[in-house]
Image 1 (cartoon, one colour):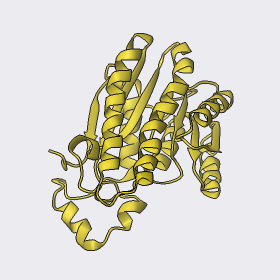
Image 2 (tube, rainbow, N blue to C red):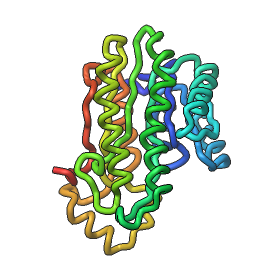
Image 3 (cartoon, rainbow, N blue to C red):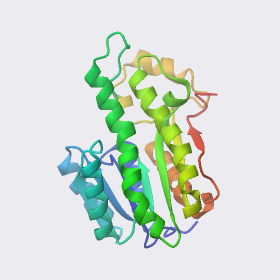
Image 4 (cartoon, rainbow, N blue to C red):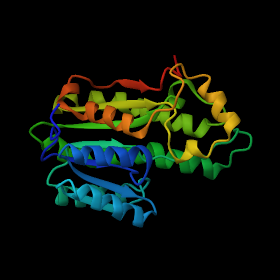
Length: 251
């Protein structure tokens, strides 16, 4: 596979100042892709990533953006296109958790997770479709979902609902835009070694690991490489699908 397989293309990755999003941005840049990403509050981290991306000789656009705002998402996409030249790929990665049992969950915690995870994906998908459909090669939308949206997780009624909603969005949108050469897929992830998993207590960590047949968490770089495959021409006949990368956790 050519290291510059995305040469001249443009990608938007939401929520990319750490973990999976950061790894995806850097891997895309390494492969020649111009990249735009948003952040919520980590301006300093964003500037460091932007400098690293530009070090690969590609264009980069980074800006604070509330993905839950339809207007802000549209403005971000417009500015990103002006900087990158084209929008060929969208990775809806931005997401938050506000875990609790439903009897203890506050309404604002439900709303925040649904608005960020699900409405955010809808906002950015809607905003990129017109520029994608004008591309000669169409485009690719990849929604970063979770096995929590496939099997449900205790204490995650809001998160599971948002991630299951992303799967429904994926399947419906894939049917809507297939005739315009735009593919839409979901990547349902299991446990990935990020800041969130680093904060787990050892007992809980060991309990989860015991249920993962491969016996370990995924590394963000591994997920970034899967993302690149699903955006690439090698996956152009895949659409409306939910690809699980979970180490066997949801078998």
